[in-house]
Image: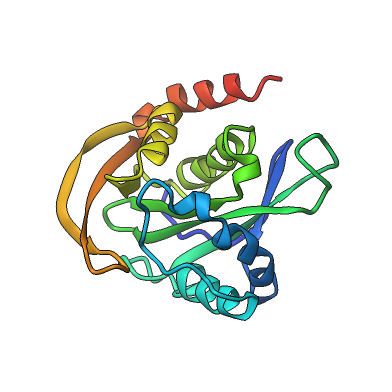
Length: 212
């Protein structure tokens, strides 16, 4: 199939649904960004918000930059709001639990980056991340025809690295001194990927984790 860009259509699973992130969603991201626990591993790629208004500004800067501006040549993003589908022990239907993006799509080379992911602490280790990743990876490989999906994280963020590895992604290596953090230090970036010919196995693993 010909590779195409994500267009922001809703991605719906049993536990979560992903809809195009809008400005109206940003106030709900503030409590997630304000939780000091997300910075406990040394993650400092953005400042901590100091107020609800600052949180909205930060969320817009962090997750909306380039929204709906994907050009197929590595620029722009398709960012999603992740919400609970139904009332459950995870919370009430419609609760915003996080955000994630498909970005840096390069159509000619058939690769895309799955990143800018944030979840509230309450939903760490639940069905939220595996199902959101299942929906995004299915969209990237099966709907859009990409051949490689990159997932990366700060070398200091060992929790994120473990979560990515558990998805079944392959650890490719480390980009040293790759990006400047908010505090002025430089981060090493750990890069993982899933290839199109690996997707069936990765998908089966994610589905197995969601059989509850």
